[in-house]
Length: 201
Image (tube, rainbow, N blue to C red; front, side):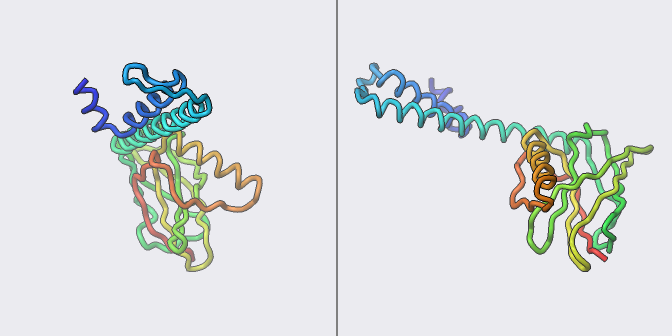
């Protein structure tokens, strides 16, 4: 039992799941006879049970997000994707040919290109068809947003299922509204591999 509690202390998301399940069991059973805890009012039992489900679900979400982040970080370290062109501070047109290197070829669905406005700090996904050539080099043609003089950060990153879901939703919103939806915060399973700052001509 002592080892169990130590494990919960080290793993906060797991502790949240356990607390949620505990509340659910108490609500469903109407109390805990072992500790002389009884909840006769059915309304409070329902409240506790629902609260337990919500708390446990939140803990499971934290575990899932943490696992995705660790997986993406491991993949980023294995692949070692870099950007060699354009160089930092380069002036670029609306379309730019990005070039880089890699140590291990990653699954293409796990690679995302992201642009960030330096002025607003918002992120924008970009669809950049990627080609892998000889000598472990890659290339991709990407669109760069902003007006003349706008400064942009261009990222190559790997993503997990959470980031992929956001990526798909981003382009669905773009297709329906014809507007680029700026993203304030990216999910933790999107891990940047390399970045470069450019300026629009």
